[in-house]
Length: 377
Image (tube, rainbow, N blue to C red; front, top):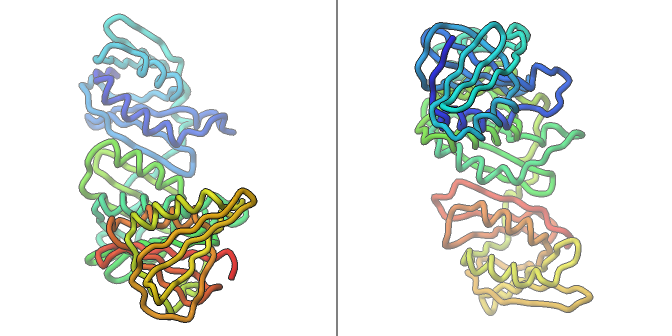
């Protein structure tokens, strides 16, 4: 087997794969990648048994074959090579790397020991109706927005593994994506047509981190999503990404969202962010800031106090409703929510009372909602 390719193309693929390779795994074979040529295509594969990647590499080919080599070693060679033209040859289990002025021989492992990554046909056969059921196509820009708005809300938790992912609830005409850490909650809605997926899933955070790497590789317009009992596949055409799903039940997040609100505030987003940062200079370890509602003045007041001093700020607001004097919250969590909202002009705060969660939203076109528990009444 002989492959001639460009350093730039190979380097991009190795950088993406590097994110899923576990350092010092229990199975040494998981430190390796599988390079194979079959049906006139070059495929590079990697897995950590939770995630799997198959990526097609452009290049000239002579003959078929396979080789299994350590990712770290081949990555260091390619990254440090000054030559753009790279030649890969396979002899027995060894990979020979050549460029204009360089040659290296990497002793490979038995490729039969490399874990099998289920291919697309295998996944489709595991679905009852492989033509329609549990298959959906999405625009990649929707996935980018979803990741941007939810990734900093979910947490990695060993005691509550269901919180270590993003919950995807498939409805007739939309996907409701949800993330929470028990204190705050983010909900992103994506409009879809002809939904054929009939189950709800929890996708691990690490899968979304890998999706970011893939989306940064090229400008993909669409991605096909296929779901079976415990796995999800993202098929980009030249990249095939598979991930295990998190088992278990996601928390009943809908029950913590107030059904009615006594106060609705409309604020300039950037002014609110600026004043939050100023007032936060005098906050305790709880990062607590108090928001008071001044109905007569059509303003809100932010206050903070520590042993070093105190701070306050007045902000103009459109106020609808009354009956609440103020609410205390973690300003860092508020800033996270504000930064995740796409609307650059205005934000809306909805409050029921001093002890119930507050709801933060953008304009009408923003499909993201952020819910935060107050610190104290």
